[in-house]
Image 1 (cartoon, one colour):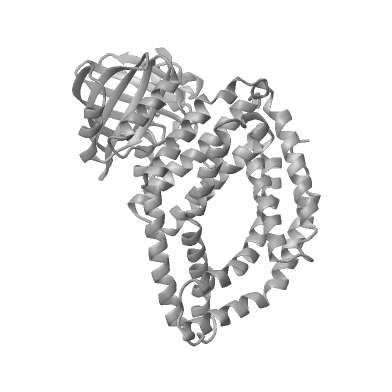
Image 2 (cartoon, helix red, strand yellow):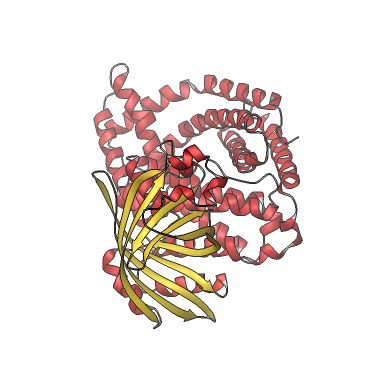
Length: 489
């Protein structure tokens, strides 16, 4: 079985725009062909859990087995021709991942059938394969359409791949995607609306600081891309929330690794990510107010006078804010941001710095110790400070949590999970207090009738009455965090 490193960018593209992409590309050797692929896994999804895809692709040239693994711009790729009905489990390097029994248990999971229009072009002294795929992924009775553009670097510089992507993006809306056809199929058979992102950042314990940053940044960028796709298709509270969180996680990664990655592109990228996160603030705040403020009021005790008018105003505002959020996720500015961010993460000049090659564990210990110390110090104002002071503590808790989660794979899992759990508990308690503080400003901007404004005031009063108890719970959460073992020591 031959092995290589695949360097590829993938974009979602509407079927009607595929011709515009091809028309915008330079001339080159071109072919069109039908590709039928069957993806395999064990009954307990051993390959999926390992971040590996295994397929057998049928074309006029014969049957080819392909195994891929890895994240980001570069992935490992292994290929071998199959003779007759030779089973995929008999070939290396699957033996590194599967026992003999697991390999024998490999079974078809789903199919992918596409029409591929493919062209090999020269661009900026590099050779790039452009492929436009249209078809579907199917599993059982379920099917989902595929329409995407793939750019694979055959020879030359990765920077040329991003430059070419920008050229094509001027001809048609291209949305950077990290969801492979394998991930799309896995989501389909699992009954998910979109590919489920990996819950944790994967890192080798011997990772360099550069590898740790790239792993965290890729993870966040993939989350942004996945939830933006859901938001464009079917705007909903979860997609808004998760996209906003992912944007803030990426900003936090930039902050965590600032001494290593700061340079010319750092400030503009961080500013654009701040724009992206804030673009979803109103939609998220309205969702929280509706779900945690209005919904309980209708279920407990007599409803305040004017509650119906308040609910109607909030519902209309939510719909408008959600539409704006979907438009943001479909905007040209968003598409440019995604390409620019991926380019900088994968090819930025910061990669040549000596600090980037240092061990990640040493850097992690320094960052986590400093962020914990800052949070504990500011946390003393939870009980005595005002809403603004508690909000500042909450921001420090987020920074510590995101950094701890980003470095967790470098350390024993149980110890890291316990610590992260205590940080999250503090963040949640402070989040409840922040929601109360944000609700008043939110309702003031809704143009409420007097009756609806009265209902909003009644609800605000009830929630404010519960603040002392929430403050005490937050203070207790901080004490428990202070006592938690520091897993990086």
